Length: 302
Image (cartoon, rainbow, N blue to C red; front, side, top):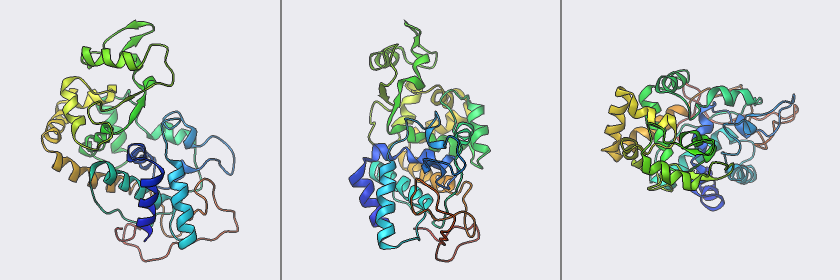
């Protein structure tokens, strides 16, 4: 019943193309800290950090799902779990990939802008920087390549790659870009643009498939970091493997998503179950999660 309510809102309130961005929230730690609009002690939150703002969308989906769940089963489902379920459902909507995720996460009470800046890999990272950043989150190099495949869905602000196609007002072509692709991007992204966007995967931007990996050898990785996956020999082996086998990629991608959903979770007596995903509970509120948990603190899959 809980999943049905969340799925209903992911379908009605926002497209899967937009909701797929929620996989990035998980990289910052699965305590829904990115949903907090304010901090009890003041200071800027993850939500307004440059890697997240204005790229992340779909907050209204989480708010709507939370409101529905509070009406039917109050003080039970955390915002962190809703976020993980929403990421799963966006993947199902866009790629017809069905998998289960553990439940039992609790919500954090602190959200710092610097945490987003320090945890989310920027589009300028080299292969080794990507590997190291994911390793710091207990994720392997293969899982990094797998999760990068989510770039097959959605759009990016031109500012994330404009220095690959423009030097001021002078057209340039980054060494990792196809000249024809760079020309297409310059049409979408004039040199003086600030809010224009481009599809990350121009072939199938609304479908979760393995086209991302097929584009990389053709010099059509939108970000510098995308191109790094084919520049590094070991990573390029994985790129070619997933380009040739979409079923394999989807299976392993789902597993990697589950593993990412275990990053820095709060369970048991840690954290809280927020009544409103945008703010922490008042000190007087005491909210517990029901149900047994497994050894890692997360409940059986849902």
